[in-house]
Length: 534
Ligand SMILES: Nc1nc2ncc(COP(=O)(O)O)nc2c(=O)[nH]1
Ligand SMILES: Nc1nc2ncc(COP(=O)(O)O)nc2c(=O)[nH]1
View 1 (cartoon, rainbow, N blue to C red):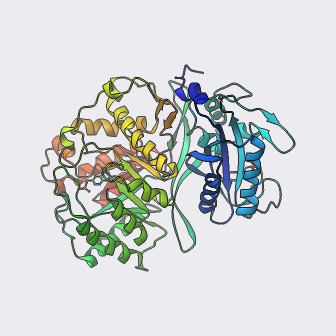
View 2: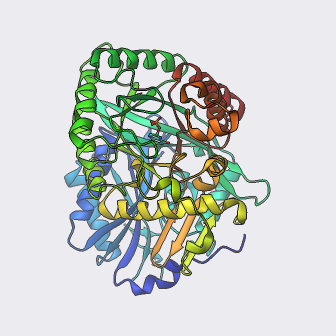
View 3: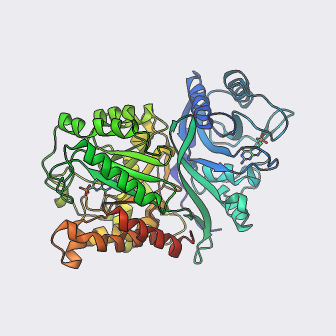
């Protein structure tokens, strides 16, 4: 194995006055996401337990007994005063009393399964226990990618398995070495159900071995999402507000976008904006933004001719109040160019809606100052911070910008999960065109895979962006014009298609574009070339 930075958390666990346990959750009966959310809420409600971290959710084929529904799995970290036996009792109570689990047979369907996989006492020592009803570490942990993958989002790379004494992430790599189909997991972002049916954003992640380091990092092999834009602002720089204040025309435009994208995709995302965010633009009032967006969202969602299970709506806003109303009106995603910096209430709104996705973008300052805040260096990295880009050796000059973006997004991420936003809701965005000059925008795009593998260890905190999807919004932006000479935004569509394809090549999972008709083709071509998705 390789010399990994030992994260502070491994050394200072003793400073926490609580025991730390890692639980695995699984569900394949009923409304699986809601079962998972209820189980987490029930655990958190216990006076002697606090849920401190929640992983992504992965959908996977049932292991052992195939003839049943797909499972949703993930892991959580809890701090607790409960002993392992008391914790087991609490898990069983939640499974059988609160979530009415009915155990038909071993490895069979279940509304919820809560397993204790690791348990550390307050001095950081690992518990190793074998009794009739409880074995710690979980005996089947090392054969299950649907447990190890989410667990590796929560623990530092140096965390070792208490029995094998090998880094846990090494055990995951050993599973991936076998290249089994069932280990290609699908990371899902749960969205509001419509008509009692599950709706997700899905990202099928294939473990790819890095030829230099021999380590595995996951690469998305499912189709890249096309996010169409509906700017309802009269001054939006790119389409001059052609559609502003005409609801029927806007719905017609949406119908066209839906039809264009669904020709080549399973789903389409439409981003509805009511307040321009281009540099130095005058900011619409909350009331204006509300009038431009909420009636439109309601009209779309009440339109029976639109296939809502395939049409995913996003609200492009940095205002918590607008986000809340938009969620109530039927949006599935909140797209916040400020990453929660402009409105302190934004994260609380997302924490209340665990089945709404959150696009957390990088920027600095505000729309009137961001063009000047383009100095990126390693000076900002605090001395007690260990940064690491898992699977990539680059930690030199060529990743300074992206590691800065990662560090600043990690700060927002930490605040968000502190308030109760779940990791499974979050999509990252490097913020192309926000607090970056032209060449830096190119670097941000080229560094997407570095951002996806960014990790930061500081004191008690370990944050890894593993499995977080990345959205990029290059469409018609100035950095394109700077290179092609196209002064006006509307002349940049052809080149936006080129850039959209390149974004897929560099690892983007969602690309935000104006000209959906042509860009969805560029994106599909790039999937065929880079993701072997035909
Ligand atoms: N994909 C998937 N397959 C499974 N197969 C069996 C069990 C039974 O697990 P247990 O031994 O902990 O009861 N759990 C899962 C699961 O959570 N996900
Ligand atoms: N997530 C995300 N959202 C965005 N919203 C607006 C704009 C500005 O472009 P527009 O005025 O053409 O919408 N760019 C982004 C972006 O890059 N990422």
